[in-house]
Amino acid sequence: MLEVENIRYLVVHCTDTPDNQSLYACDIHHMHLGFGWNGIGYHRVICRDGCIQHGRPDYWEGAHVKGFNDVSLGVCLIGRDVFTDAQFEALEMVLRSWKEAYPEAEICGHRDFDYTDKTCPNFDVAQWCQKVGL
Ligand SMILES: [Zn+2]
Image (cartoon, rainbow, N blue to C red; front, side, top):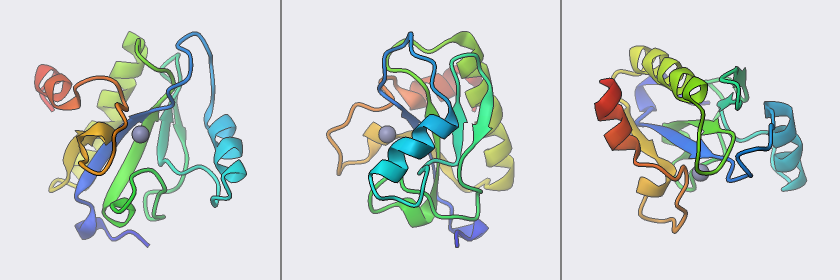
């Protein structure tokens, strides 16, 4: 169980799939089941059209950021490099509501964790946060 007071990071990811490919939370669910996980590892998924879909509930520990799953929530944008305006609007909505629920938590990108060589989500989350006032 994730406890509200333990949430320290709100982590932004991307699926690293072609930008012209529409995928949904159910696709990621199947993919992660295939890894032998307990289904989708993220808490929210943002589709190319900006639709926000639910993965794991917020109280259920995710599988998205090794070593930090017990202190974080994960949101994943569908795509690789070029995200749609609708996706960024949706991301802002998700993060604003999380910040309300978990005011102490810090927003970051997957690549901001030292343990990984991944470039996910392929943009500077801190810079974007500054731009939108998050
Ligand atoms: Zn990631």
